[in-house]
Image (cartoon, rainbow, N blue to C red; front, side, top):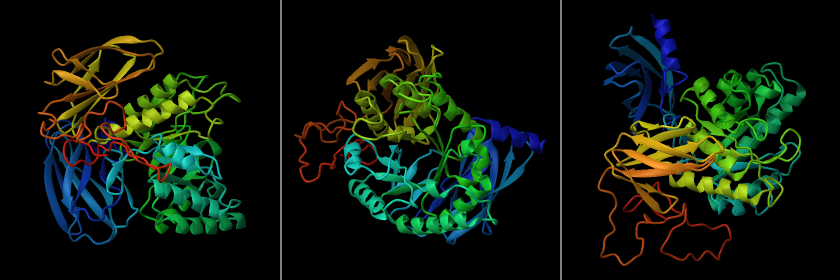
Length: 519
């Protein structure tokens, strides 16, 4: 019975690849941690946590993931073993172990929130939106794309045969701008099988250690990009596990990423990743829905323990790919992936100004999506339970998130035909605001009746509380930046940014003085 229960726990939805996992990849100054427990049904489940001789008992209920808090006070630095005794009402009790990691705080630390997929950097959640590029990085590329809304770059670079000064230059520029880097170590990740290393492999390991030590404290560093499609290149999982350990031992403060093109093989590399990326490039040979479907398949493989990033196809015109995606295809591929659980975007590939992609309108769409994602971040990384949402059209995917008293309903049309939709939401709200269209619609008994464009999206924000109210005594046009009709752009002001062409001011929904936003 225990084996069948564990099989159910791993296959339940939403999932975790392990039935028990600590919520954050590591803790520093937090006073409380959380254990995420897969619950088999809606009945109450008793959970007993044992950690360093201390016990915490809690009762949770509701099918899905249960959250059990535990104190961090007195927990030593390093890795501690946590044991969970889980006793569901109608099932046999079972136990599972997981690791709790506590580290001294560092200014450039990056934590993973395994429940939401958020990267916690600079003390705030981040949904990375960026792109691959070539090396050496074009001198003005970071500033050109940062102002477009992108928050991350990942240059292909041959560490053995490139100039360290070039790498320092782009890293320093990204640090000035506030842009993050998924730093590629790919040129050092081939070959080897652990204990039996060739002389070439040993030289690469020495370079790996040197490179990680060079940049592990850099403010622009977001993650280490360890390997590119190891499932397609038959790179040894054991070799990558060894390299993962080298990097992680040198720098436990930054996660490690790899990209996969065969979801069924990706779990072979579970022990060498903190983030799994997927790079399906369907256009024009396969349905555009392959991108989102690949994320859904990876979610089944990895559960919620491993964040997933999508690599949208931003190239085409030769080889197997006779053309680039249209802007509409790019929009649908990216947002369908997000609705299926992607919490990061890294487009392949950007080489400005007109090499990849050739289409300025398609690349502009990528930037527009990045701005939308940043604007909607409080919803996309919310751990709050959201109501059910249903759409009467099977080819239109719908999902709902909650952030405080607001709901976000997102629709993605997976076909190249505009369709009328009837969307039902379990809410008492009577009006929905469309944040990127400067308009509102009325709800009839929790229902929205609209059209969704071909390969299009619609976003609706429903206020279930009192909402933000502008103080009539305030003479500033938009004092809390709540009324801006365009993603990312603060209204009611001019900007004097003459000192640096990469300087930006945009709406930030993660912090606020009053209302829900700041600039």
